[in-house]
Image 1 (tube, one colour):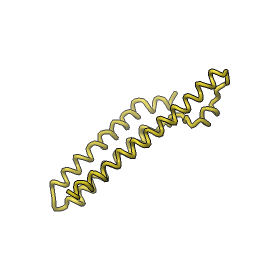
Image 2: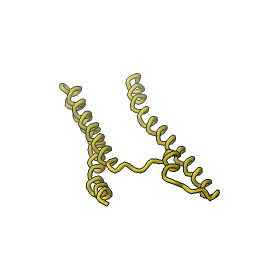
Image 3: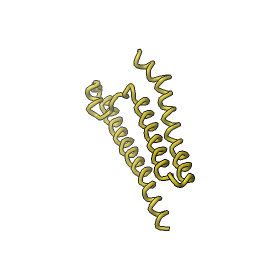
Image 4: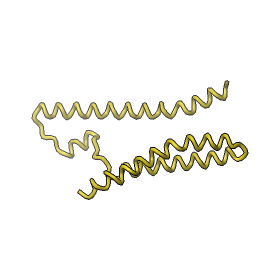
Length: 124
């Protein structure tokens, strides 16, 4: 029972941290949008410098490629980890490969998006 609680706690912190970061970013973006809305209502000019000062950054051109490569690396690390812990236990090795398949496939999709759409934006 204690092992299950430990595993749930460790793997439960990952979604919790992602949720907290997402919540913070969403609130910060909402505040910046509200400030820009007030600026428009007052008739102030919104310059790129003011937008940048509010914390709204332009989208990075290679973001999809970077995220995809990180996810593929995580999948590779999980596969290697499964090989190390599952040296005598094939079931653990298969479980880690199954877990590693998720970030691997998501990473491949990000890389494919970069090839299909991201490079075209750089050419424009």
